[in-house]
Image 1 (tube, rainbow, N blue to C red):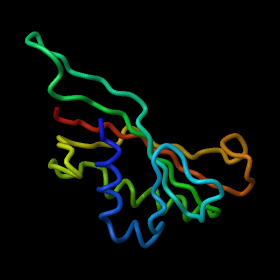
Image 2 (image 1 turned 180 degrees about the horizontal axis):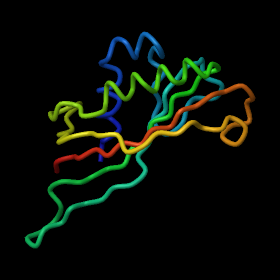
Image 3 (image 1 turned 90 degrees about the vertical axis):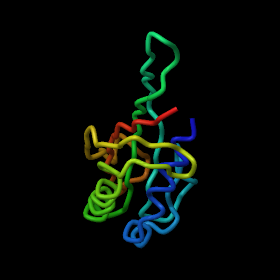
Image 4 (image 1 turned 45 degrees about the horizontal axis):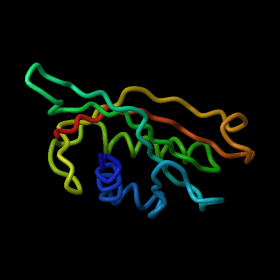
Length: 134
């Protein structure tokens, strides 16, 4: 599907976001004990749009992006920048993936006690719909 490659390309192309997290933008899960702050992205599900004539030519993919930090304010700042970068991104080709549109679905603060065994880690989780042309 390669949608992760497009998300990574869009996020790492933003100088403001990389000033906050460096190259610490990971697919699916972070490395063990990463330097903070960091971002993790993962595909949650894919909804194809089949037609009477055949297979889907446009899929809607739900992507979750989590911003993590040891500071609540920094987690919020990183998540706000992720939204600025992704929400209603210009349609086009990103890392050879043809994106028709991206928009935010929702956002929530992750409870550090239930989400991780490390105390004092703050997270913000966002979900996006990504429309990908096939």
